[in-house]
Image 1 (spheres, rainbow, N blue to C red):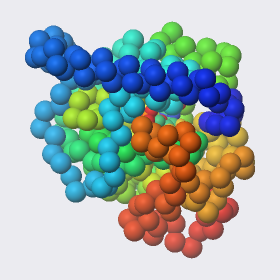
Image 2 (image 1 turned 60 degrees about the horizontal axis):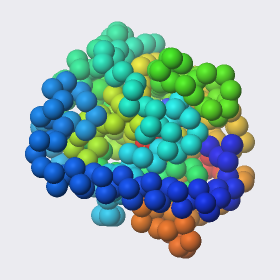
Image 3 (image 1 turned 30 degrees about the vertical axis):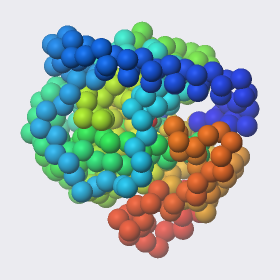
Image 4 (image 1 turned 180 degrees about the horizontal axis):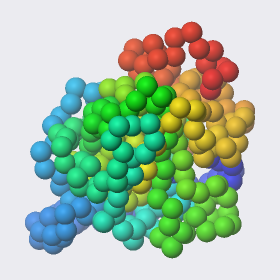
Length: 324
Ligand SMILES: Nc1nc2c(c(=O)[nH]1)N[C@H]1C(S)=C(S)[C@@H](COP(=O)(O)O)O[C@H]1N2
Ligand SMILES: [Mo]
């Protein structure tokens, strides 16, 4: 992140364009709502998994922060998804064309029940939950998102990891024909593809860790990582890998994309920590997208993104400056 462009490099003309763009989108959406029921997505899109389609049977969960929700228009148009370009507005323009059905998820490695699952079978056994989490990007901005998903721990139990399963490695789809950022060159930030992430098994099993399938009660828009993405609310956003096609249970700490790209800047753990600055900028404060103007003072960043009470014990005795 920001290997290409630092916050301080963003020109004020671009910012103005962005704000105008967002206001226009908000207006168009409001106009569509006013025009009435004929435009309701469910009525004109019979497919079973279209972005924006309402998800049935979603249970509200107790996991919700009090912060004001980031408006839908911002959550779905200000995105990091380098497979569709490094610009924040590119994923919303280019990702909707990606095909999310059929979609397979491979479960491999140190488990008793490996296999390749169809996305709909993968999700079916679980009750969908709505959880309102803060998402804190390492670029020092944040959002508050009402995710819909299932606890990753419940899914993992079903595959019966063995005692050698110390970590879980995740992979995003690799398909340069659908993901222009995966073509060689700088449009995708020059990263190694496919995008890879990983968690320690206890982090993956933690009740806060979610596999997201939707937001705002609707099927996840592609730019937010459809059909399945990770949501780890106490870690920087890049740990929350999108459009997952593989989960591999392993004994050794897996290679992860951003750590591989710049290990001095992005550690394996990447827990939100206002006491450990990024080598090129402070992590003490953040700007809330859609709420704080570019010129407003930033709001303080909280230890573990505000989830210290729930997750600090995972790191008891660890030097968090060393294991950043
Ligand atoms: N496959 C993939 N997953 C990804 C990324 C990416 O570029 N590719 N960007 C990450 C970053 S840096 C952030 S902040 C979050 C952004 O999620 P959002 O666009 O839904 O807010 O996705 C993360 N997951
Ligand atoms: Mo991020």
